[in-house]
Length: 259
Image (cartoon, helix red, strand yellow):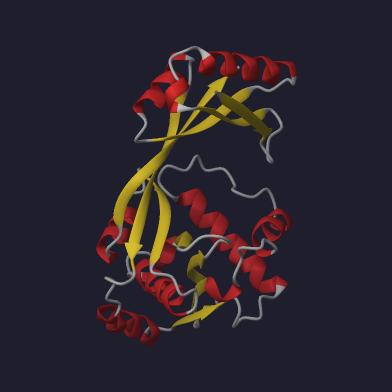
């Protein structure tokens, strides 16, 4: 009829993420309630302090099920998709050329040798821009560079040539980045994260690095579609996606409950 599945957070052993699935034809018969009760009991026995779950935003009955059991919404990520067949990147050439004339160098982690020094700078730019995004609670995404290196740079989905970087040649500062990849078994690419250092914002660097990432997806990854997730509170970034031609798809609501 259904199943539950729970796992501890990698960053906090007191937090537990879980899945609870019941077949549509078996719902409203008590199976979901029993599965949840079982999961919550075991979590308490294992000294968990918080339960977290992700729910599709086009499933209102799923959200209602969680709310009745004391779960509170913490974030809502919308999904956005780009049809690369319809994407016209040529109008962005002038803006990219202007940024280059102002001293911005557009490169990739592969061109930089994917060295540990470059990975450390990539880590700082990723972590800083992620913490500053609207909707973030200000906490670090990775507890250390070593964790970032293991979970990102050494992951099978990590593509150094798909890590687009903008560097200020006058200061050497890393100004912006956009990471894109194609996961094994998927026929589309995924734009993982795009971030711009706060002192370089307002110069359309987001659009520039994203356009270069989309070109990489089309020309190297050989895909026709690109997907990404974005916090609904990050309106400036959503505006950039809309400007480039992304369309909105069903997203994910994250909910949690203190035990």
